[in-house]
Structure formats: C-alpha cells, structure tokens
Figure 1: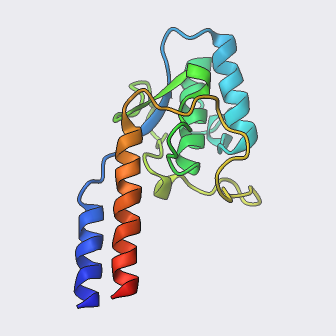
Figure 2 (figure 1 turned 180 degrees about the vertical axis):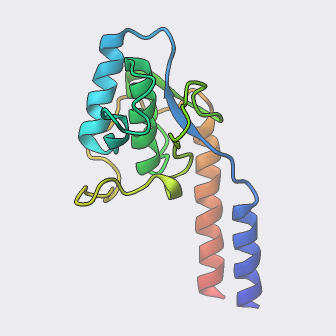
Length: 161
C-alpha cells in the first residue's frame, strides 16, 4: 500500500512540468540591468556561458547577458518565489528569450541549471541576501506554495503509513 501511494504521489508531481525562465524586462535602463548581472553572477549564477567565446555570449549586449545571468540565478535558487525580481528588473516567463543563438541552452528548471565550472561552489540553500521584492508579479507564488504543500503532505502520508 505504501509503495502504491508513493508511486501515485510521484505521478501527481510529474504531471505538471512547465518550463519557467527568469528574464530581464524590456525598457529597463542598462545601468540597472548591469546591476542585476553583477548581483546574479557574483552571488549564485553561473555566468561562464556569457563570457567571450561562451556559447551564450551572443547577443553581445547588456539585455542578452542579463537574461542569462538572472535565469541562471533563478534556476540555481530553485525557482524560490521572489528570486526573479531583481528590484523589478526581471520577471518570469514560460518561454526562453527570442534572441537565443544556436548552441546556447537556457536552463528551464532547477534540475537542469548545471553546476558551473569545476571548482565553482554549488547552491547550498536559500540566499542570505537576495534580490529585493518578496513577490513575483507573474502569479507563480501561489503555484509554488501549492506544490510545496502537496509535496509535504504526500511525503507525510508516505512516511506515516
């Protein structure tokens, strides 16, 4: 019985596998986008891909690099609500940026966020200091909360049966 409940629970969780990206907003000043890049790359993001000769270096502009940096941060932070805000310069999207070049693969979930270059520390837990803003205007906060609750309840049922 316990095995059957566990399998049903896992099936329920895997049924909704939507990709979610964090992208910089259009129309934001380059200075603000650069601040977001600096924060994301300095704290948690894997920005090796947007260095010169990296597969995601093109388009070589602040907006393109910002998209990569904040998405990398967001995925490595486990898509925690509020981790795609960056003082209002970024928001979530179900689609990768339209400017992605061949060979550049944008992570769309925490599971495929990568581990960075050898020797790069991996994400140990929630960031001590994160982007400002505790709410994601896209409405994904409720979805994350429901998923967390379902996961906790399902785990509890499996453990206590």
